[in-house]
Length: 397
Ligand SMILES: Cc1cc2nc3c(=O)[nH]c(=O)nc-3n(C[C@H](O)[C@H](O)[C@H](O)COP(=O)(O)OP(=O)(O)OC[C@H]3O[C@@H](n4cnc5c(N)ncnc54)[C@H](O)[C@@H]3O)c2cc1C
Image (cartoon, rainbow, N blue to C red; front, side, top):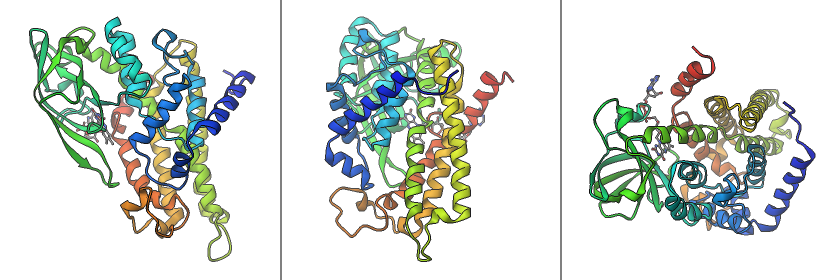
């Protein structure tokens, strides 16, 4: 495995960089650089710009409107977007449900859902977890009872990200109570405007409204909206979870945070020295950077395996280590900006806040970021579950 970028990859990196410099709207760039909160609508706006250039879902196959980019290209693309402070793109449509529809859906289903997912027209959310079904997802109880050409859905989903803004949900529902729990699950695509759907916001410790509790009361879903076979949904769900774990490695974001920590560290303190000159701070930052470098190489190994068709089980490793690193960096940022991250004023995260800035632009983001990163231990499969997966599938224990 050659860890160096080829000349083609270097040229591609330059192309992405040039495209972003020419096309990222200035207000979005300024907003991110000033440390304001980026919203779903910001990501959607950027997604539409990318889509107009043909980069809406470049990892998809050409027959589905993609560009067939390999994992290395996708990685470079994402790394450059993150480094340039582009608004984050929602993963649900392009990285999660899109590949499932492309792989297991019918032609009619692909025609209906793939183009708007690719172009950023539809926002999607994931309806997997339930109040008593998280790690043990197969025990889920939201029922879908078939009545002619429709299902009638009753039940509840929880920890649902962006369900209050989404147009569609890809949901796991129970269509049979016979046999093993895994054998009675189906995947339904549910229009979030359907009658009988209601949601209750869950405000997280970072003060934001991203999560929701979603209730279904006699919600009618056409049978057309079922992906693949009835009661075979567990297979499709597992296909999607593998993709989700690799997403949470956050290598590009952590790389950016290291850079910001160095910028913060370069600020002069009252003693006339920058924090970066303090041995303790340097040692802490260096230790995390070493871990990040190791993760980057592991990621390249996983990409190499994916490219050469010898796919391993890297997702759980990337998720586990990536979580540790992003949390350690957010903690160090908190230490570095000190009292500038406090008081934590929610309004200061929105454009239009015109009080005198407190400390460096991203100081105001340090506490919400620290709080948000705690959730990485849980979302997309908890740390304990990742360790179980690594023990079983990677170490063969
Ligand atoms: C920020 C955030 C966003 C999320 N977004 C979504 C979303 O959009 N859609 C969605 O469907 N879900 C979402 N989730 C839910 C997430 O997938 C679940 O929280 C997660 O799978 C854990 O399930 P649980 O909360 O029920 O915890 P539980 O499964 O009840 O786990 C509780 C504790 O027990 C431990 N545990 C459980 N089983 C085992 C085991 N076999 N071995 C060892 N330890 C074990 C866990 O590690 C954990 O510490 C989100 C969660 C968060 C935090």
